[in-house]
Image (cartoon, rainbow, N blue to C red; front, side):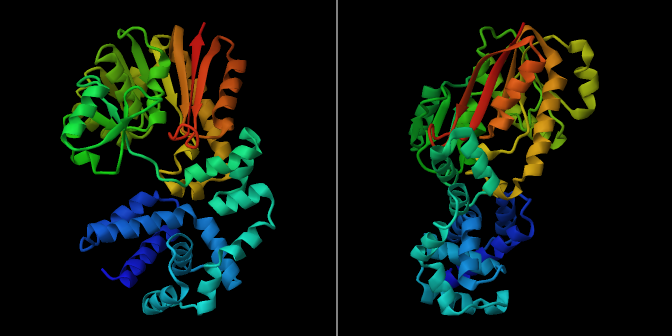
Length: 425
């Protein structure tokens, strides 16, 4: 496909994102590709790269376009053009001509000097220097200003830029060996025999990192249940319970699609009992498929309408481990889903804090004497993580914080994750 057509398709799918920014960006482009089966793999790669790149850097590109045009109006074709000029080194005259050819589709063209201004990095640098440090970094890396200010408060001024930069980088694909079938070394050999290169994780004992992206779901080891796709940070949660026996009862109260329940099943080698529940039945339906493929024999999925019957007061104080992987801002996973940036707000953050506290209060009674409460988030914000643990232990002195751990994409290379282990007296 010629470049003009590729750029036209990219503008079209990005326009769909701007119309519905609350939808996950990967769902929008998936549906777009599904309706355009004539696009080849090379075409899709170009469109996908520019589409996700534009979303990642949207605030910066918007500011560049507004500065060049001297207006608050931003047409999708102008924002995508700003990305192509800033990150793909397109030449302004050529790009301006391409955009002109799309005029009939997008009903807007711009003079050459607009493209030249957008391509002028020194012009952008002079404008950014006029801003306060946190505001400058937020705009340059395309994050809400309040988010950069919170990072500055939580981690210090010198840590803000490394964190923001890392959240715009491409995340690796990480696999977890399913111990029910294989260990990590065995899985690595299986993949080596298929010509697939991996490296072992330095922080997660079952994790292998793919050297390059590929369709994992078509692999024989995946279909056989020998592996799951799970980031290194997420893989730290289940082992953090420090299980010493496989004859235990585990409650995963915010199971979602079951990644951490499956990890517990792997660690327990299908012994013990794992009760997995969630408020979203659709996620549990997806989990059921994964359970079958993994050959986990010890997971009991509890749908929302069965929670009162199966997880009522009669089973309070009977679980050795209660995992609360609570709903959170997801700021630690922005590099995997950049549209999270545009859903972040102070109001949403306050609602999440209240929801997390409600989940803690509601599920703490399930923990038995000397049992473990695991609290985890995929958030970089201390208000959702360390501060919540402090709040809970102050209200519930029967729980003692034994250990907590945080990983960051700019340090360990994993998604931003937090996990705390609390012991009941």
